[in-house]
Length: 392
Image (cartoon, rainbow, N blue to C red; front, top):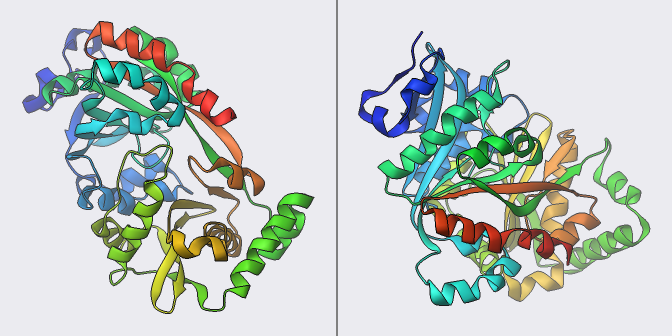
């Protein structure tokens, strides 16, 4: 069977069709998560993946969180999708926001000489809010799909007039399997901020705290006492947030203003749509003074995995009640109640997460720039900078 491509994007997506004419595959762009059959999406995602629920992608599409486009490169055999890669376009993105404090410091000189270089029209591949993996059907070759999708990404960039392509937050096992293919297509692997993952033992939250090493255990109990002593603040779980979406967004942006790295900016619409998702457990662990939220954790769960997706704080009151820590404690407690075995804590704020027992998961960004000279320049400057940041 020959490769066939949606005629409207054939020239853009498969510039060298001769190289893949023997593969029994088709490749196309799917414009929305709602155009992907739920059963095929579930088959590709697998169980225990709250961040990959279709409701999360629907919230990103409808929430105006940064990209001008959210689409999906799909590889199919017949009517069955066997590989799927989310892609997003940012027409005017500050690339340095993705790279961390140390990388931004090293780029100051370059930015002063070439101020427009890092304000970019870019395509990002992978999950915008988490690890940038390729969804792959059982039995399919990851390398074969990369050989097809890497030139498709570059052609899509030409179609959308984007000079940058970033396959973000690629796990080490994927990078190691495809490094030669990435290099062959002009991509450079650059250290990203590592992910953080907590392996949860069975038992209750008091059991979890009791099992922590001495200093983390004492610190955790002290922060729990600080919240208990703040009589006018309490934490409650919310499963809907229509009336609080604006306030949650303000609290989230307080934290974002101090973040080491950022890409998307969550909006009230994102919170509202996400809380209506019916294929993932979504809760707001809201610290409230009366009816007013002063801190929150956006918490997701599916199967035996939970995720502490994003946090928001009112800094005027958060220190007194240790709200950053206490909303996360409530997230851990809810995950244990659900009998989850793993909880994702994502990037940045490494010290409090390591104190809870989180392990670091190395990630890399695979970066392509259309101009070969600037491509080499950026790769040489950024190599190793994020690793230095996370070690200090």
